[in-house]
Length: 220
Image (cartoon, rainbow, N blue to C red):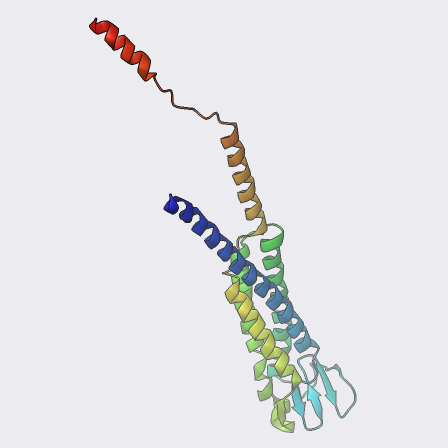
């Protein structure tokens, strides 16, 4: 009897612990995705990814000679293919991060989307590749001419990669989506109602005394 009571109790405790762990991973993924998008947006809007001797430079904006942070013209002769690549990849990383976040949110909170987990995996890998291709900015012609060092935008770039990497890893450890949990609760409720409606068959016991009297009468 003790084992019969202990076994369901152990299953309930295990189920609760796994659900709690899955909830924690789910919150970690959603928070990391939000932080990753914010950090990536900071990279796109940054004008101090690289500190120059006469100003600063970012993937999309620059500040030369204290003129203010303005969008730089990619047709400038000083702009080479490395800066153009960093510009495109920083925006591509932001787009892929938004796609990753959208599919993760729909999967866990609303409804499943076609090929949801596959697209999440692809976008998670794609955002890492895109952000990694922003780092070669320091090898551009501008840096070779004027000299460069990493500025505050580089910190945002590193944080964006860390947040998206953590979200990609922990997205495999999240608890079951909300719609699946609803289905399970409905099925359990139906099973409970069926068990209540089914009549309980009680075993019929033959009267021992009547059988004994019949046997005695037969002997007489």
